[in-house]
Length: 431
Image (tube, rainbow, N blue to C red):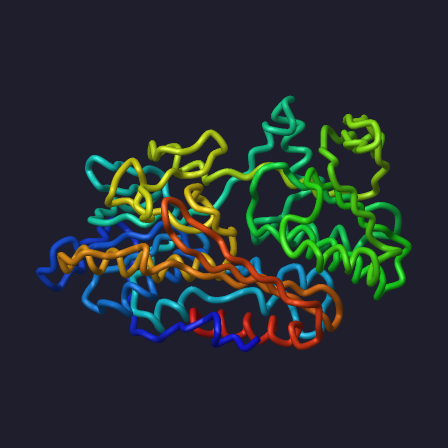
């Protein structure tokens, strides 16, 4: 499948805002009503939104606020862990300046402290920023309390010693070191019952760690603990890989819930559903290293801003839009939204960003935007082995609710090549 089927990105021009006591509205150069747009969070959703807004209307004053000065990609980070040829840590890292200069949006490299909806003000550790429209693309936080109902010290211990590594940066580097230092034994990965960032990621990671063991002749096994009956994404592809390519290196445990971990005894405690007895049974698993993925939820700043959320911790939106229930001038896309059955993936974030940008542009022009005729699409590639890959695609139809149509590819070398081409093209258009 050719990447142009899924990705139609375009170019634009750019300007940079310096820090210290500037307002996002200070650079408005036209009389367009509500042309001052503030984007919080510089992940794929945030950068894509800035790009598309400037593409649709170069006169808009678009400002992206991001605390990090380097962008680190989660897509292809598993391939880096698995030592797939041509994938280095450098190939995951991008300079925000490249995107800023390419697409002509403003950039403020500061940490967000507070959001005042009534006054339409965002406060950072250095600046006070005004907005007309606010786009929140702040991603996820981990909710360890859902699985570790103990002390803060235990949560800190788990996050440091068994990193989830669904966020780019230090925990991903820590996980990589755990794998490269691994001498043998059991490497356990646990999945949460609820939704989490990038559905195929833990299964792809299991394959890539197994690939590393196989490639380097390490007497190790990946034990994958999953509350589900089958993998959450590309189920047939991953089960095929577990049972064939990595038969000696991956043990998949479906219908199994993580309960606790003891680092001193090197034990992980679970409850496994015994289908013959029709009940859950307690179990202990020995481990040498572990990656505990807790339930995910929307970044803490959504709650701090009093954005209405579901009990699972995801943001409520005004159907069929990406406007929050709380405030129609505040938009949420990316991993934090909980209104639609969209996978929390980079391509979906990019696709939703275009829809969102069209809505804001239409509102500024006093036009009506039809979300039902502008639905997003998704493709998510996975690297399964040294030379094989697969993809899953999602298309949508909106009636009384969002209806999903999905398709999964076969496992092949062509899809491995397509995955690398997708990543190269996707990042090149943004940076």
